[in-house]
Image (cartoon, rainbow, N blue to C red; front, side):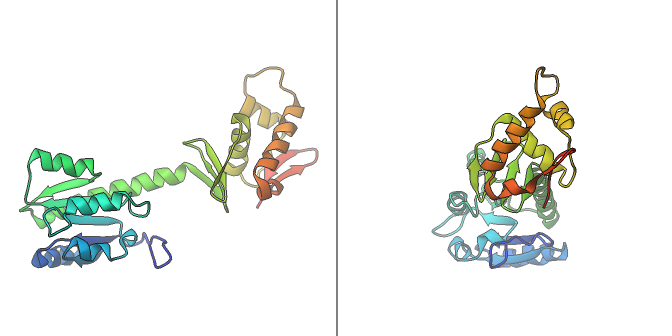
Length: 236
């Protein structure tokens, strides 16, 4: 994120937190060669004073001073701004219990020292690739127009961040119109797409659902436009 909290995704930013200063510099140098923007901190205390939400990945040493890597991760997972930032733990401890602790804290990977730089770079690329794929999938699940949002995976609609209770048919009509902004759908088309094989559904049913939908989505109700003699569309 920049100073206003927006992520800059063109060049992934990585924060390396390790009390071994030489190791931090080695990791920073090699990751920057790979094209990443890298910052370092030599303790969890120092790192926690930084703008953590601005990073797309954290490399955390487990064994640090007063606040361990595990403790720092636990702190970050409790905050909405930092809960989903990928974490790779770096540690000289490779016992099963330690690995389980790391993964239970939501670690995306766990690298035991000593490690090769090539190994770290490969793991970093893999985690960032997975994260990018997740974000793309999440974006594909959202239909957004200004502050009107439709989450097609969780089947939720919201305006200005407040959930709007829509019926199944209202939701499906809004989804159809938002996915095809500017396209006019006749009542017959809406019936065939939304009601499909249901029988005894009148054209008037569409009008009733559209009227209710307009009321529920407030200021965006005006964006659902009636084209007399043709049908309905969502216009910007």
